[in-house]
Length: 208
Image 1 (tube, helix red, strand yellow):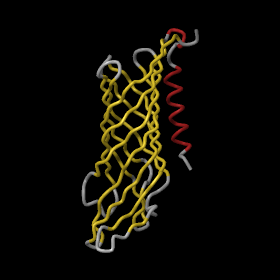
Image 2 (cartoon, rainbow, N blue to C red; image 1 turned 30 degrees about the horizontal axis):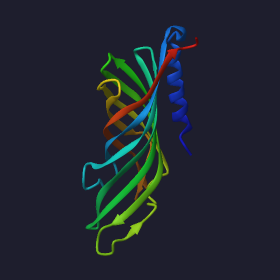
Image 3 (cartoon, helix red, strand yellow; image 1 turned 45 degrees about the vertical axis):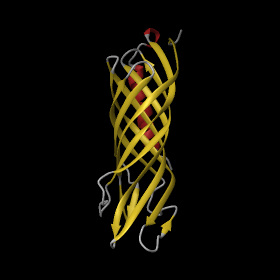
Image 4 (tube, helix red, strand yellow; image 1 turned 90 degrees about the vertical axis):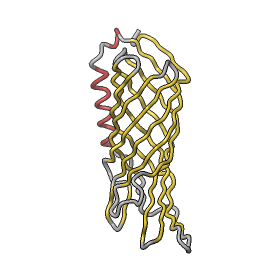
């Protein structure tokens, strides 16, 4: 099941920080949009992958709540592709996974251009495959080693390139196991870099 503890922790953090503001004096701006970019996967299995990073991509939609000038709460739903390459008994093997990623983050705005981002991400496995690229071309889908749910901690920066476009660079450190190999579970970490586009923005004074 989805890690309820991680969601509860996130909600608690957000409510505590948001509650420190005097809502009657704050200007609340809500924006929604789309984002996407490159995603590099680092699987921490033993044995390790034959390549240090598996490069693929992600894309989806997000919603942001800007409270005053210093604080932004952002949630998203992204489709992300991860995986790794291995050598098993001299046979090249590719493992691939597709996830629904649900990051919930807090952005601390250091001016109009730069923001620092922290939060948690819940990953829900949508598809997976284990493929041996030898003479037999053995394929197993879904991959029995890929776990259905995992979550991690997110840190990164956001660079605003005007009112519509922003650059988002994130590192996600796996806090729970995502893949089982030889009976042992291992977490996965990712690095992503992509662009976001604000499609719609509205603003109003809170509680007025």
